[in-house]
Length: 210
Image (tube, rainbow, N blue to C red; front, side):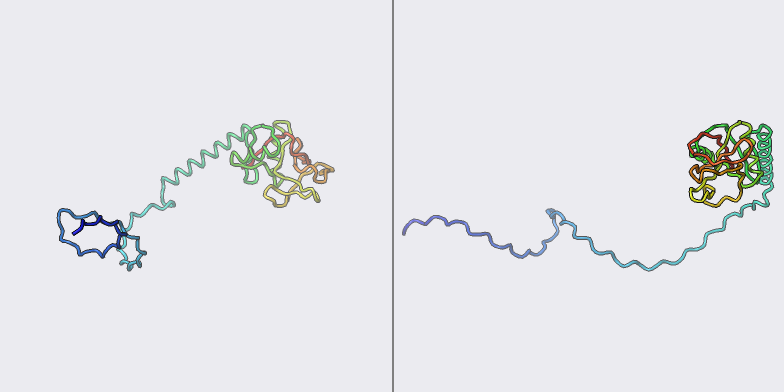
């Protein structure tokens, strides 16, 4: 008999067979597999029963019945009235038509005057009757200079309006004014209380109302 032949080359790898049955639990248990894909959100459960109503809190004291509060409000109001009265005596404020007018004596252009009054919680003085015009005039005379008013003029038709866009219902023009046909859109007050149309870039007294 001749010698045995050489081993042949390895064949191609076959397909894996089906998994075998799970063996009994033992000490050599394998690692758990990776988590599967997250499932869809389930339907919401049924609404639970309404809980019991909580205990009622202690009743507060009505403002109209709080004697101490009334006293504090009265004292504060009286104190404020005293401050206003003192400032009026010193010429630092004027009151008219339910408004309070004040000026620091600063002279600014129109836009800066509007901004300065807004910064302190007021607005540039806008007299709507003779009494208010006279209140502004007090500061104009005190500082002996002209003041801007919170009124501007449209170029078409010399139509005046307040800064909120509403029409003006009170004027106190100097004779032959306004004369610029809207080309000077700002309004200034002279030292006699009468008005003139003027450019807005001039420096004029800032008077605010509150």
